[in-house]
Image (cartoon, rainbow, N blue to C red; front, side):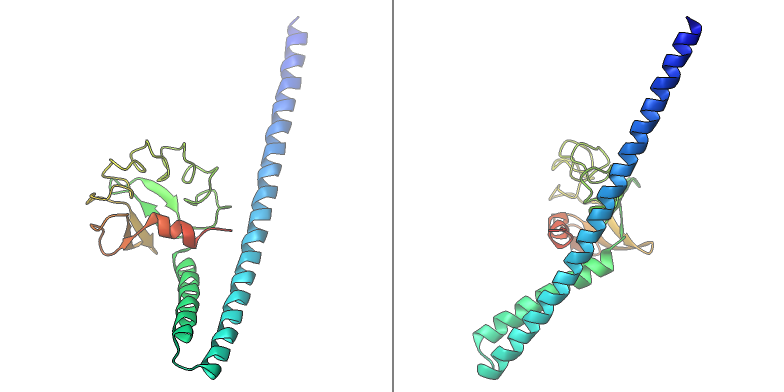
Length: 190
């Protein structure tokens, strides 16, 4: 009986280990696909910026100083700004006013990213996530949340250990306020 039980436990352990290994393999595959998509997104953004610049140059030749030139220049400036923000804030850490680490800014395939919907810092069900609407760090009524518009204690964004912004939808962030909603748009992998 003991041998049968031990054999059954061994088979169960091997099956669970194989399942865990398969799950890790699946996750690694998904991360690889996400990295490839992010790289393609970067390439497409560069091409889009090049095309915008070409269109702007054509417009400037045909109707210099027109409202269309101003609009096209503004669109190009916006795209370039988005890319600068992505590059400057990629890897920035988010820390709550109580010192709790809340993840980092980065692509959705990074498990520590606030945009990784299946990671601790990006999932809507994780109390470590700013996107968890019932947790201390995501609820609109919590002073530690970036979504509390009247909070004087929003999370901070740190780059190389230096506070560069407060992550908040409110106006009380120092040195400057940065909206998590705007970051989500800038860092979307779509």
